[in-house]
Length: 537
Image (cartoon, rainbow, N blue to C red; front, side, top):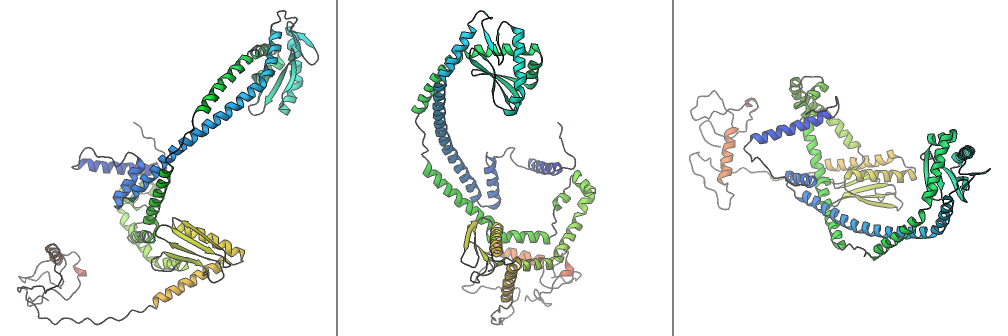
């Protein structure tokens, strides 16, 4: 087996993903697990949705995909019914047109076929005449026929290629012989009655330039004339066949889709679930969690592609210009650099936040405003979240208001910004003025938040209870909260890990516990624990 890989392409990333999956599968196989596992679902979309639901603990993702699939199934059934009815109606129309056209042209075809049959029935070839523009030549004079045919074609070649119209170059017993040319495929064609023979340019020029080629074309014309005599029975048979098909199509009842109400209910259910999923992914809380997660990763130094550096392929290490071991060893330093860059960029991030013309009007970030206020007589916009979608409202200040609803906040910002700028352009208001209105609004909000006062609280009075010796039993007062054994055990374990008093690890005092802490230099003085005489405080 050979793996085809394109050098310095995205194949390196793809194979790295495959390698990771292979390693993960190998880990599972080495573990104590069954040799087979049940798939989450046969359909990949449902399987992915179920995986997402399992990861998030929210089954609404699976419900939404299943609802969409039900809508798709019902729509497919409806479309099948509509297509079947449309095909039936189209067949009825096509058959009716075909029967009418055949019946209309049948007398003319019968007349042409009779003339050609009479001409072909003449046994004496000297009496069978070909009519050309300048002379009538018997069929027995093959050399003269070839010369006459070549002369007619030479005269008409330029005309037919220029005009694309059929031209008559001769006749057989009153039936015209026509020459045509199509620009689409660049070929000539000969017509006798309704029979056609095609000639490419080289073959046509061979008939024009050589007597042998002209003789071949004469033979083709005779065969066309003979075939034209058989058109009448073919047309009559086709008319009879189409009449039978038309009767069958008209007798076939039209199909009806009976699940319209079910489809409407499924669409409503799918839309509700789609909005529910949108609420989980694009609500103010979800956006805030995403932003916090991004900031946390950046603050931890997780720079872009750091996982590729930590688990590099040979191609990725070559791209980085380092060996795999050196690249892996460089990850902590790179993360430290990225972490420091994030800390150094705090001022720039704050400046960017203050320069954003979109301002959140509350701490929930569910209501945003852009431009001027609604009662200012100048253009502005407002975007709000209604637990399902982002609704936007824009105004020009003169009574014109436009509203819309979209799934994402960024899309709402984009639509509202473009609409406000359009209103502003109509009133010759610059973008700078609109942005300045937002900056002033942000400044007022920040100032109001900074001037918020906190009510003083009452001083905490420490109880003057007597110190309890460690050996004394302490009972809880009636009505007080009591710890269960598990929580009490956890608190005692936590107390063993990080002591609350300053200690000397080299002390030989018998009752002192020896705590091993790798961060002893950062041990804080909490003022609690045991006194020198052993009393608990």
